[in-house]
Amino acid sequence: MSAPHDTVERRGLSPRQRARRSRLIQYAILVLLVVFAAISADWGQIGKVFFEPKFIEAAFRDGLLSALVKTLEYTAGAFVIGLIGGTLLALMRLSSVGPYRWVATAYIEFFRGLPAIVVFIAFSLLPLAFEGMTIPWDPYGVVWLALGIVAAAYMAEVIRAGIQAVPKGQLEAARSLGMPPGLATRKIVLPQAFRIVLPPLTNDLILLVKDSSLVFIIGTSATAYELTGFGRELANTYANLTPLVTAGFCYLLITLPLGIVVRRLESKAARTR
Amino acid sequence: MTVQDSLPTSSPVVQIKNLHKSFGSNHVLRGIDFTVDQGEVVCVIGPSGSGKSTLLRCVNLLEMPQEGQVIVRGEDLTDPDCHLDAARQQIGMVFQQFNLFPHLSVLANCTVAQTTVHKRRASEAEQIARANLSRVGLDDKVTAYPAQLSGGQQQRVAIARALSMDPALMLFDEPTSALDPELVGDVLTVMRKLALDGMTMLVVTHEMAFAREVADRVVFMDGGVIVEQGSPAEVIGNPQQPRTQDFLRRVLNPTHVEPT
Ligand SMILES: Nc1ncnc2c1ncn2[C@@H]1O[C@H](COP(=O)(O)OP(=O)(O)O)[C@@H](O)[C@H]1O
Ligand SMILES: [Mg+2]
Image 1 (cartoon, protein in one colour):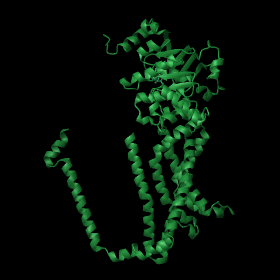
Image 2 (cartoon, protein in one colour):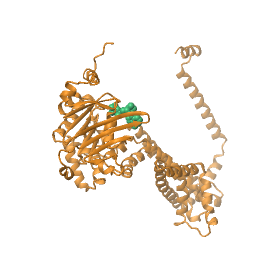
Image 3 (cartoon, chains in turn green, blue):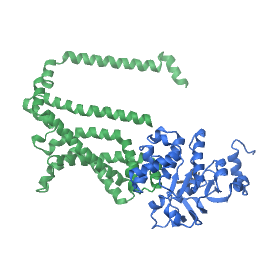
Image 4 (cartoon, protein in one colour):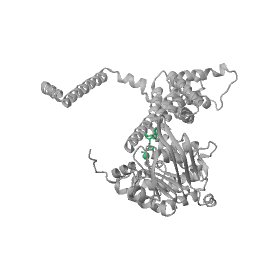
């Protein structure tokens, strides 16, 4: 208790004053950098390359909205597959049956450790490896499967943690009412587990929105283009980055509200705890 | 109720024979024998850690005993062929920590097992639930959620939830121990009423006044065995065993400090 006092007297500054001084210095540096950038940058050129109105208009004309819808469709389908697969895997991991546990653990570790892009490359090569093989609902089937397979591995761990966070007394109360284990899990444990993991699951949804941009690796036709593919192609065509920037803003349009939802859910969960 | 009527009234609702339960090397129940008759209220008392909760949890096989038999209404629950889920439907359990389902309304807490396990129609289940909620004095809380209720109200919902399954036997594990003192009375009143209605009850409790007034029989447990049992007047009023006397002295006179 005496040590901090000594320092305060020696330097003549309290810890709070010192923290304030260091914050002021950081602000000053930041302002300097911004001013420097503002003076030195060629704003006209930057505007023309990144924010050219006529290319923004072109993006809308050439189907920006349908690309946005595609991204949403890809993400939603993959999320559903990930949610169902993840729940099954989580239940398998917590099963008392050894082989279920082993299979689930192997799956989760494998697909969590693998870059999503590798899975997409594999899916793009599948028709070559297995001749005549087709996945239904082209292109949705492939996209949903490729994204969903990886998402299931991530979500399984989140959901497992959620199930384990449900107090043991809940299952006991359900069993004491005569509910068989499966029924008790469905009616009592899982609804509470999903409530607990809603914020981290929404985070996974945000990651999925972004991962859906990997679709271009599968090489779907132009009509299947989602935002990234669409933006990239237009940017190539016009030799201008504006369409890509526009597509990028569309991602933010999806992910920022989701981020707000996550924070709301988290603070609500913190309040009720 | 039909099964109950067809049984001879003399046969006990619960029969426990030579029950042993260990957790690892911790031998918690060391040979318990006792019965609970139809309509009887048995209170189990004893020091903390003596195995009261474990005994209660063995009665509906939430804990699997290593040795001995638990026979509820003529059916041996420890028999591997016994249909446990069916047997548990006739045994209501009330926990110290209530264990209400927080994601369901008060009404749904009382109907979820009825509609899924008993396969009752929603309207019928709701009617039964409302009747039981009214029995515990919570008609006006039907649409509330557990988090909006006081501890005493939650415990009464838990009792209504168990009653809604038409149990032949009710187990209570220290139902008032987690409650603020001023809320204990409401729960005990409900339990007293239940006993008067003829419910067969096995109650672990530290409420000696309740045991004295409501119990037909008091069982004193210590160290995983039944040390002494008999009428409340005998066990609480005039205990014979030194361990019972010692326990009661401490419980009935908590501020008293033993001279050393
Ligand atoms: N699930 C369990 N796992 C391991 N030990 C347990 C478990 N439940 C109870 N015990 C042990 O059994 C003993 C008796 O516990 P309990 O039946 O809860 O006593 P009481 O209800 O009389 O206080 C204690 O020593 C306790 O640590
Ligand atoms: Mg206990």
